[in-house]
Image 1 (cartoon, rainbow, N blue to C red):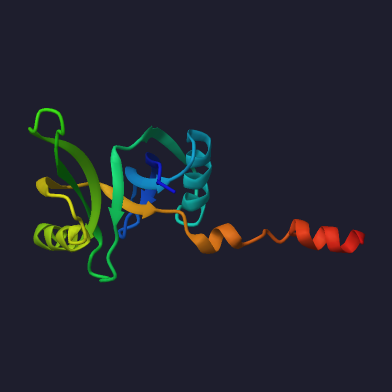
Image 2 (image 1 turned 180 degrees about the vertical axis):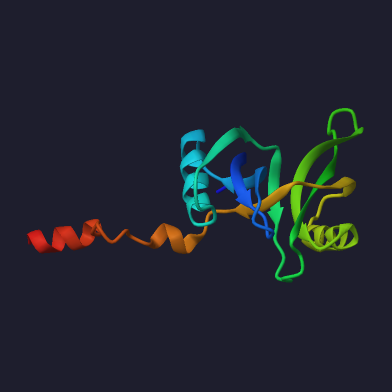
Length: 166
């Protein structure tokens, strides 16, 4: 299943280390099937991070097609890379390229390039990395398979309900 990535901007009042309040706007990337689900998911994620009022100031589909996470805990920044996939046109024989955007976790630009190249090492088609730039994303929320299998406490799985009826 391909991911549908959405960019969400959340505005809220943050208390600095010195105790002063400051209005901030933070960007997040999340996987969702629709705008409604994206809004619901970002609200759920923010409730555990932000105490107090907040609002979603922007929600839009992202052009990111793949996310490249990292196991290294020092890779705490997100970089956006444009990768051109090179393909030969069968009719004319000319090469054409199509751009895809990747979001790469890394500590710095060099590490982002290394992590991206490691991720692309399994490609069998030629490609070129056109650009890499820093982003303002604070965090990325992909779908996790463990969440999909959990049933909320106030509900029963359908199978358990059917067994009780028999």
